[in-house]
Image (cartoon, rainbow, N blue to C red; front, side):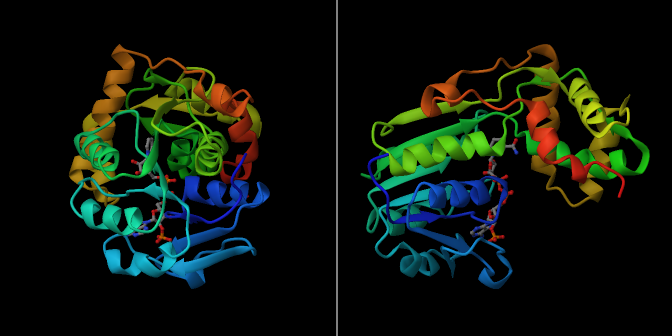
Length: 277
Ligand SMILES: NC(=O)c1ccc[n+]([C@@H]2O[C@H](COP(=O)([O-])OP(=O)(O)OC[C@H]3O[C@@H](n4cnc5c(N)ncnc54)[C@H](OP(=O)(O)O)[C@@H]3O)[C@@H](O)[C@H]2O)c1
């Protein structure tokens, strides 16, 4: 990788961002990270953690000083607010790697268009479902070795956050990724019920899939505080993956030179989250 310095990771405390920070440090980059509460970020030594809030673009000016490339995620369901953030980035940095999504929802497509017009060098990451999404089953698995969800037949190739981050770090630090849009998946398509089965095999305790109605899942997610739009989006996507299983792409290996990690590998690395203490 040619360039080895000056990146800012926005969303550094999240599933993907933590890996982007760790792998960028390993690659020898100078890494700065934003968090809304730097004191609680729990990031490794060697990374400069500064306060930054995407809803307050002025708060990003100091973090962006002297930075060459930015890892950007946008944890909102609207593009509103993005122009000011992009302006702050484009006046200071040269390159942005944006964590979009394979669903390319309206706001994500709008953000991609804004970035294309920003004058920045850009790379778009469009991941399919994260393997880490199965952590939402962890409580029930620990308690009763069961997953109660709809759409057990929904089939997708779950993506390890390390692989997503590995592609991000190549695009942040290396050349040849400008203008690329990477659709990223794990290496194999599994139904949700099969994923529960793999978790059971890894933890040595069979995990049962108990199909519930979409409406029951909807009510539970709303009770858990999910925004209605997000609930409907997730359930609609899962229904779509019953009718039309998502196929794996070879993009992780094409970009990193290393095959994407399997779902079983991901579960093995997170098995403690599913085991009864
Ligand atoms: N899950 C999937 O299957 C999937 C698939 C495709 C795409 N995606 C996309 O991936 C993104 C989420 O990535 P992730 O799962 O790695 O993140 P995550 O674990 O959900 O963490 C969210 C991150 O966003 C930061 N954040 C939240 N509000 C912020 C604000 N106002 N200003 C600055 N930072 C803020 C948080 O930082 P602090 O709280 O420390 O400030 C945290 O680091 C979303 O855009 C989602 O659409 C997800």
